Length: 177
Image 1 (spheres, helix red, strand yellow):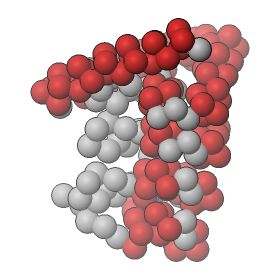
Image 2 (cartoon, rainbow, N blue to C red; image 1 turned 90 degrees about the vertical axis):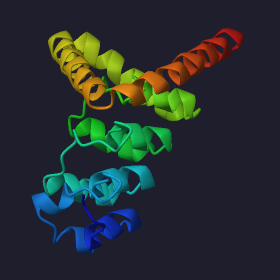
Image 3 (cartoon, helix red, strand yellow; image 1 turned 135 degrees about the vertical axis):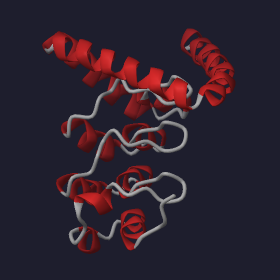
C-alpha cells in the first residue's frame, strides 16, 4: 500500500513549485486511499497543479477506491477549470466508476449544473465531430467497467441499488423542471 508523500500534500495544497520536481512515478503513486497527486489536485480544484502533474506524466486512467477518475472527482466538486483541463488532456467522458456512473452522472447527482452543461456539450461535440473516437472511448470504458466489476464485484452490486435510486431521483427532477 502506498503512503502520503510531499507530492500528495503539494497537490492538495496546489503547490506548483514542489510538483515541478516530481517524476512520472511520483505523480502516479497512490497513497493509502489509492489517491494519486493527480486525483488530489482534481478533487481540490487545483487547476495549475493538475496542469503541472499532467505535464509530468500524470495517468488519467488511475482511480480511487470507488473507481472515480480525476474527471469524476473534479465534476463532483464543480471544478469547471479542472474539468476543462482534463478534457483538453484527452480524458474519456465515458469512463464509469464502480457504481456505473460517468462524470456527467456524478455532476448531475451533485447538482453541479455548470459542469453538467460543460460535459454534455463536450460529449455532444465529440459524438458529432468524431463518432469513431466516441465509439472507441465507449467500448474502452465498457471494458474497464467490466474489469472493475470483476475486481470489486460485491461493492458494485451494493452501489447499483443506489445508482438506480439516484437515476430515478434525477429523472424525477428533470421531469419536474
